[in-house]
View 1 (cartoon, rainbow, N blue to C red):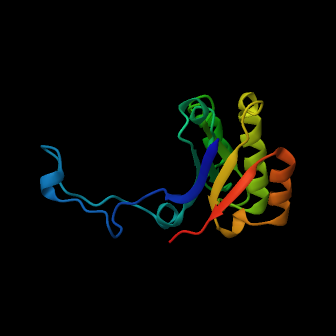
View 2: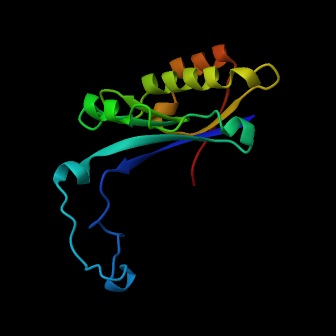
Length: 157
């Protein structure tokens, strides 16, 4: 089974930035063009989305979609308010940094293998990742070998 992992930064606010275009003609009737109030916290604050995808629908349903947030973004009160309302495959992980790391990747691989448990009797996962620094570490490769995960690293063009 082939599983692709990639991550991206997700901002809390995109309006008013380059590439965000809003014209009077695109607004619903009765609405006026205004400026959204944003503070520096919203513009600079990001979380990281670690997304998994596979061409096999029955496996895709089990794959986690992990959002990494730091304590400033994922406060205890925010996580408590979200508890029970986050859809099944989405996981909110609060950690010291919203950046992915070798340590986070080891936890991600461990979780992935736990969730794939029923399929591991007949299939061996091949994890496809880019060559981001957090994906390349001796401890990560050792864990993958121990858990039976083949790793395929690809260089983006």
